[in-house]
Image (cartoon, rainbow, N blue to C red; front, side):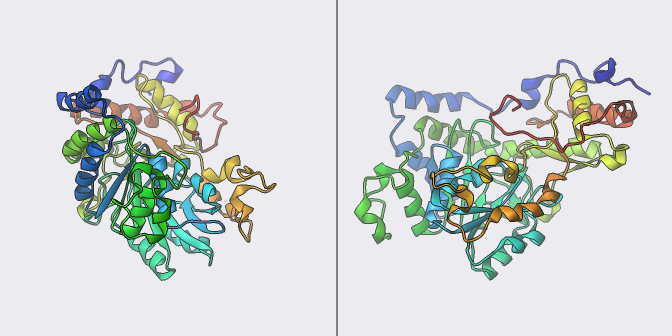
Amino acid sequence: MEKLAILGGTPAIENPPRKELFGWPIITEEDEAAALEVIRSNNFSGTDITAQFEKEFAAWQGREYALAFCNGTASLSAAMFAIGLSMGDEIVCTTKTYWASISQAANFGASAVFCNIDEHLSMDPHDLERCITPKTKAIMVVHYCGYPCDMDRIIEIARRHKLIVIEDCSHAQGGMYKGKKLGTFGDIAAMSLMSKKSFAAGELGVLVTDNRVYYERALAFGHYERNNSLHILECEELKPYSHIALGGIKGRANQLCSAMARVQLKYYDERCAEIRRAMNCFWDLLEGVPGIRPIRVDESTGSNMAGWYSPQGLYLPEELHGLSVNRFCEAVRAELGGVKCSAGANFCLHTNAFFQTFDLFGVGKPTRIAFSERDVREDDKLLRPSVERYCFSVPWFKHYDREWIERFAAAFRKVIENHEQLLEGDTDKAQGGLWYGTAND
């Protein structure tokens, strides 16, 4: 039996080459030159470079229109405005996601209704219809941690109930589902391109759609300088409000980010292919190891995980004598020379006070139910299975290096093969997780 590092043994990995394995985004002289051109011309707040990026991104995405925003949250908010989400509407989303997928529904007086997740941490189609009522306006589909949702089932349910589908592709830019690109299934899609994403362009968001009306409404929401007769061509109801951002925000992109995004887009697919090669290699090396399972797709079906943003594995404590996921991750971190391994990803949103008690409008009633005919918080009692899905993060390899990937896989194997050393005093059986933007992030 090999003594684990957390108990005083020698770590499996010391001083790993972080930049060579995990450095991201890849910044070249081409990126720097594009950024310097914006800086030297003081063209931060224009729209010409952004418009070029939008045209190129729409072609790459395979949609008619693309619209850049200052961040992903703004693009998702604009998508909600675009479809006409309003007071008393309900919008369905999975509970295990980042808050920006759904929290801004409150700004429109709409209620977030949470759906359970499946074993891939994705929207469970079997639970989706439970969430739908005559007040349901839309479904917010989140391709969480890069895993493509079951779009066949979700779209079929949405069409049968005449619901609008928004895709949040913030974790899965460029991902595929059965040969078709994510972000092209729904009526509209939006995503973040912030600095930690697989598609990283500083701080940027993008909305895509084939619907001209949705595009114009999204543009009017946060682009005051483009809310005018040159761009608003079909939405007659918007024309009296030209030159005003109807969402009351300035949502346009900083052209420094747009310039960087144009360069990143040129190389994104090939760089993601290397990430997928590295991540699949890592999980192949752990095939059959008890207690853990990969969250990944069968690429032979024409699906893929894009850039594997924030890769996760499933944890099965019953295969490791009940060892908690928190203790497991603590032991793995000690073996990895400081490389991150944590439990739980996002906490489930329905457990946050924002969705239970926050009163945005000061009406003496939680905003989530302030304009609803029912207390959707009662549905949260049916979300316990989402809390009990144990998961953990694994190293996010950006570059393929077989030797080092083998060493990382061996570190996980070491902990699992010697896990009985960790059972004594293991009392924290919680799923784990974090609220991003805290000291634990």
